[in-house]
Length: 198
Image (cartoon, rainbow, N blue to C red; front, top):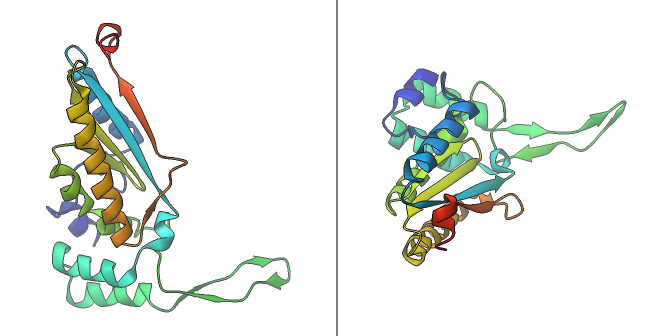
């Protein structure tokens, strides 16, 4: 299953989690390369978007539909995944005490071998970002937006980033995910000469 998902054209190439040879280090290198490439002539704005309790809010029906229609998972593997997701429960146990059992109709386990399910669930957001001409990189529940722009005319670029961020936020909300404003941030990077033009 994992090779099938990771080799799909719908699994974004800019997702650095859940794949061999794609780590936090490769994500950082890709983002820095974009910043350094633009540094001589442009400033770069980076926007980090972080999702709140992302793994806990994945809608099972949307996930199964996406697996089937966008990743071609059918028949027995799809049945296994449906079985894995349905009738899940959780509780907290401390010593001899236990909380009531709660049924889970949303969420996927974090850190399991099926971790790519979260990336599958979020894969369509890449099309939303690309439609704005914005560079991006994802690492599990973090999405990094990046746009290089002329230092003497940042208003157009900032408008593009604002529209992109709004559309990404809307897509997340429509799919049961929510941005965490306390962990989302923006950063403008440029050489001293370019920064003086801002």
